[in-house]
Every structure is written in C-alpha cells, then in structure tokens.
Length: 172
Image 1 (cartoon, rainbow, N blue to C red):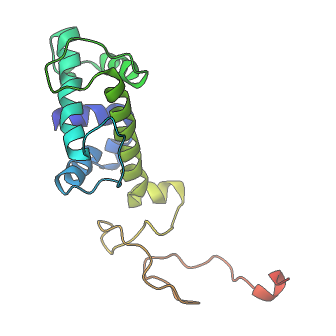
Image 2 (image 1 turned 60 degrees about the vertical axis):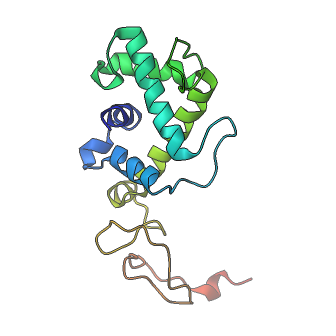
C-alpha cells in the first residue's frame, strides 16, 4: 500500500489536498476485482497485474538505489516513473516481475484507473463544475447513475437548471 500511495502521489499530487486516497480506492477495486473490464494481452488479470507491477516497481527502485520506491525522494520517483512510462525500465528483477514493455502497459493502466477515480470523486466534480451522472449518493460515497430517465424527471442529487429551456424556440 505504501508503494501504491507513493506512486499515486506522483500521478495525482493534488488528490491528497482534497482528502482523496486514490490508492485505497484502487486497492479496493482490485480486492473486489472491479476493474474496467479489459486488459492488455501482455498483462495478467488486473489484481495480478497490480501485484506484479508494484513488486516490479519496488525491485527496480531497489536495484537502482537500494531502497523501496516509497522511500525514494520525489525526484527519484518521478525519474523512475518516467523511465517506466517510456518503456525503458530495464534492470535485473526477480522472477515473476514484469519486463519493460509490461511495466509500460501496466503503468498506463494505473494512470487511467487513478485518473478515473479522481475525476469521479464528487469533490473533484464540484471543482471542475461537472454535475453529470457520475455524481450520486447522498453521502457522495456511491457512484450511482441515473435511475429516473423519464421526461421532466430529476434525480435528487441533480442541480436545478439555471434557466428554463423552451423547446418551441429550438424546434425545427
């Protein structure tokens, strides 16, 4: 978890300022096997890929610096993540770890998952002024979609329109 949090802090440094623990959300997603439904052929299932990716990230950090990824200064974390993102992470790593291409693909997936969870958080939606379907739940913990889909039906969590929309003005 420390490694995942250290990596996410470099991907989305603002998340912590909003009290959003993206790493915890990703961990829960993997524990519940609730990925986005697809994966690269070169990678195992999402939970297995996260385990192998984090193990590889630590192995690469230890091979280069003698320390785990979470113990590295931010600049060293950034450098290693940039190397991985470019597909250039080559170092002797233990069996069961990813090669450079797999790490590149996995890191792309982690960034996608992290950003998806970040943007779906109600605090971030409010920050960017979005009030679409990903908002929901009275506590902001549930990401429900629309349930009321009839004409003039609104969800309790939807904002009221700023002005009315006269359909006759826009009819063709």
